[in-house]
Length: 302
Ligand SMILES: [Zn+2]
Image (cartoon, rainbow, N blue to C red; front, side, top):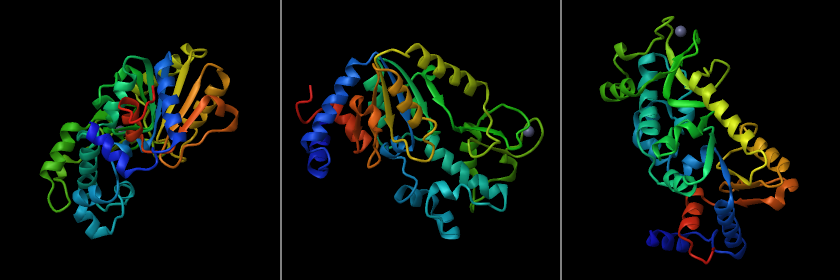
């Protein structure tokens, strides 16, 4: 672990300045002192954990699809209008398998868990890759607003239920040939017979099942319970696409509670409105690297 921080020191100048060191020191103190922590996590957290959707990881797993269609990244290739469901599920089963059923390449999520596990915490996330649960976070303290790669739903949808896809996805990966799964593995709705689809919020057909509603209620209860607490809103890797889910509510709740703090860690994208800037810290570096500084500081940050 010390060699890791030493490597970071030599390769990354971002952390090596007085202002950033002061920010890290401040965040560490806020983390220690907070009575409650709400983590708001977006795609940047999983990117920091090594779940990249373009480049080497994409090329290694999808060379045949890239050759046939000229795809540039994993995410947009998922929206391609494949001619057959056999090919569609050949693509998606591989995608689900590597992003949901394999572990993240780096320990960023477990490092985060170690930082908050002894606190009263809650996680609100737009990520759908299940990394929080895999790292040990308590399921009762998680709210996945946008779905889960591990769940299917009716494509119509004719009913509000989701279905675990692990065993079928693993079969699809194992049995596909020439970018096609065997036809008998294509999933259909057990109620109406329409094709199944991913439980991901892409449009109005997204199914909010009973688990989703229970988690939403738990999140609201947590926020209500800590309305006046010394609470930290910790925003990690939230991009600009859906600021209404995490970013804007975090800013607003920080503004409304004089005991609250807001910390944003997002490489190149961390910013805060003037109104709450006195109780806020922005760190524009890699999230995983920031965590390692909280745990093993190169400098005296205590
Ligand atoms: Zn149906």
